[in-house]
Amino acid sequence: MNGWRDLHCGEPRPADAGRAVTLAGWAARRRDHGGLIFIDLRDETGVTQLVVNPENAPDAAAIAREVRNEFVLQASGTIVQRTPETVNPRMPTGEIELRVETLRVLSTCPPLPFQLDEENVDEALRQKYRWIDLRRDHMQRNIRIRAQLVRIIREEMERDGFVDIETPILWKPTPEGARDFVVPARLQKGKFYALPQSPQIAKQLLVISGFERYYQIARCFRDEDPRADRLQELTQLDVEMAFPDREFIFALMERIVERIWRECIGVQLSPPFERLSYDETILRYGIDRPDLRFGMEIQEATEATRGSEFSVFANAPCVRYIAVPKEFSRAELQALEAQATSWGAKGLAYIVFRADREVSSPIAKFLDQDLLERWRQAGHTLLFVADEERMVAKVLGLARLQLGRDLDLIDDSRWEFRWIVDMAAAEFDEQTGTWHAAHHPFTRPTDETVDFLKTDPSRARAIAYDLVGNGIELAGGSFRIHEPELQQQVFANLGIGPEEQREKFGFLLDALAMGAPPHGGIASGIDRMLMALLAEERIRDTQAFPKNQVGYDYMTGAPSDLPPEQLDELGIQLKPQAGTSR
Ligand code: ASP
Picture 1 (cartoon, rainbow, N blue to C red):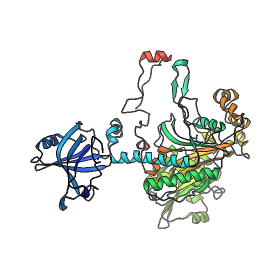
Picture 2 (picture 1 turned 180 degrees about the vertical axis):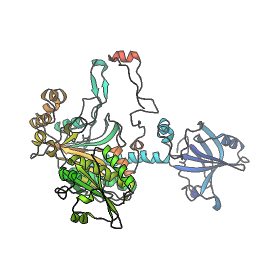
Picture 3 (picture 1 turned 60 degrees about the vertical axis):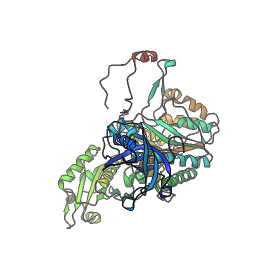
Picture 4 (picture 1 turned 135 degrees about the horizontal axis):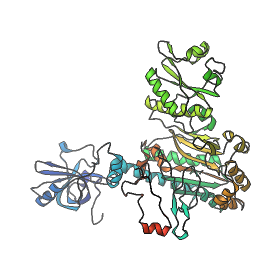
């Protein structure tokens, strides 16, 4: 095949018996068996067993005895058929072995920080020795499927006439809801580039420039606070089109997702995926990326409890509950309430309908008998939250998910994809107490609700959509504002004043004024999609070289200090630091 080897380690079969071949690869395992030495030689295609007999090949045997795991070897010899009792049916090459005549060590390896088949290895250690970690089957699978997925995406995009265009990495801030990573500009001291949180503005400009169908497998940088399914450096399929058609965009994404699931993991999905409005989604599941692999939907109780003697219910703007298929104990209920208050609820009311028809609940005596009968579900606990609608949805949504997981209600064999449509245009930020764009400020509000952005942002709706799979947001997009006046109005309604508009987005406003066609698009996070596809718990394991949750790279030590001369060149003086967290 080349100077190093004639065959790959995964290739030899009984038909090759008698052939003289050279193989090369890594020593996966070595065993000494009463004179004979066995080595499993691995390359990216598989494993062949080497057998070295000191009687026939004393030099090779002397070398083989010194071989340790992960040495890189080149072995020449003859393929021989194994005797029936030594055949290994679990290996594709299990009917043969290589009888070694000469053995060369191409590279050695010290004792490993962890074994390739070891489980539950500390994540920091895995990241520090990523080149070892990536040799593990699990990581080989993840990274190879990632490449396969990107290939499928490219094929489908090209087939539909989308043009792959790169956009700048050193750029202006693009608001996607995170902080910007910034890069100091040496040649313009005191100025900074921002890394793109997404190519959002660039792709709009490309469509305005006459590239009617754009796509890119784009790197995005978001200085986010640590969250389990968030990355600071992510990759997304980024798409934009002129004269957009929502049905076309949905069908395109469905075709891509269908092919990925079928070709990468052999699962047949059946698009078109159902659509749920944002309002209905919040009502039934409490969050905009619902996991539909289990029920326990949120139930409305505001009207039913309006006149109740339980004043918390009677006076609350919104009362809803979930019916959990379990009779909780007092202690469990206390723990649930503590959890709910940590999410922001004022409290958690409950009714336990025991299987023996007994009802345990401090609030039952205040409630109407008919209502209790209507709600009765033997062996269930009803958990109620009474508050502003936003808080009720949030707390019951989180409780539903957590209990779904804890009580093992989620059917892992199911794949539930939904389009969430008619999205909210604005989102309330509990930390700052202000409203900001739910998607980004270039998203087109619906004509009927655009004025609510000023008066009651909670009621404004956008021509925006998300694709959700098993509770993971797999894609999100929108139609854009293509009229400069409307864009200015929406900026203003979102609290971005004229000066800030000019400074940050002047170039976009100018472009919108110079023949901008109606346009819209979508983006799909590749790391997230892999997480869903592979049922991977850690999003970081979908990338070859991830950083940890606070952006530290255990392997390279990045981010690292800069020598004073370099800081000087950049015109930067550091403040004394309180210390960093890793
Ligand atoms: N730029 C958006 C994002 O990165 C996607 C889009 O609106 O196309 O989430």
